[in-house]
Image (cartoon, rainbow, N blue to C red):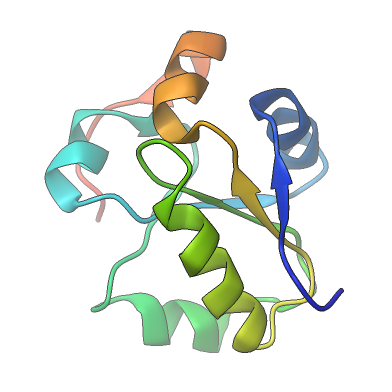
Length: 109
């Protein structure tokens, strides 16, 4: 895979069930207010450590607010060596309406 793919919340949910990792690139306040259950908050401060510890071949789903910023982040992660990267279409806003039972609140740490 040389580029990321855009996927729907339903496709992302199926990928999560198969071991896909979700990273949320929204600001810390937004993440704390609500995020996809099991997701990891990723920002400029945690990015290096995340990449260093990650399995580069494990499916990676990137989400943001509405699915725009996640595309740039997904492209960046492909360039960092991740081989199976997805951008969540509609972002967290569509996710929380589609799968409200899979939304958690709390601190990103």
